[in-house]
Length: 202
Ligand code: HEC
Ligand code: HEC
Image (cartoon, helix red, strand yellow):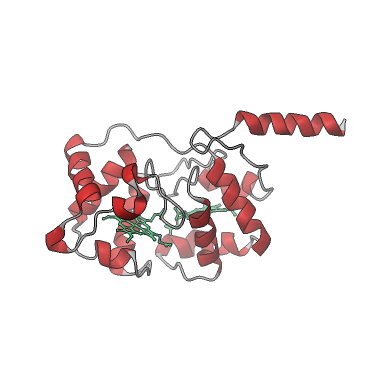
């Protein structure tokens, strides 16, 4: 019986093999089901555009964010409101397993219906930056097509509203980050909207 149960679970896990990473999704940590999944979705694709998608995000970045929520160094409005208590419930040695789990899930697809003019303008900033405003090309760190790598998060297919909120939080230093603040410091609300439209459309 035990063997049958284990092989069924393994079979299900194989069915959820990630297309991007080509790896098998590890077993779901128990806290994910019924807690994290309420806001982030069972498949790591969140149903609410203020809650980030976690599927296919880099493992290093997921782990660093959970530990930043736990030690309260990520202190933007929604981090405080939602994630400080959530991350406080996660034991130190589960952080890595949770990060591995979400990272292995298939990343979100592109959002339909973004304004093509905004998408094109955002794509230009993403690929080329803006010299006159000291905006470094985003792809230098986040990779071509924003797939992310290690400490540089994946942005492709992320929810537009979440991206806008984060870029504004970096700009105001509410989300205090010495790498992202200078990059977005001089961006206007309009340019932030264009970048978010482009990234959501990838
Ligand atoms: C009640 C809703 C809610 C629940 C439950 C929840 N989260 Fe979150 N989570 C959020 C919100 C909202 C944010 C965005 C915070 C911000 O804007 O700074 C977030 C952000 C995150 C991030 C950062 C993602 C990024 O792209 O930077 C991670 C990682 C995360 N959550 C993991 C978890 C895990 C693991 C659990 C379960 C232990 C969980 N969350 C439970 C609402 C929730
Ligand atoms: C010099 C490298 C670098 C450049 C250039 C850069 N980023 Fe980032 N970005 C980072 C790092 C590192 C993080 C993770 C910060 C953290 O750990 O909290 C990040 C985080 C982000 C996040 C938060 C993602 C999430 O899930 O919460 C967004 C959105 C973002 N960057 C967008 C951009 C955009 C748009 C540009 C171009 C205008 C850009 N970045 C340019 C390094 C960079």
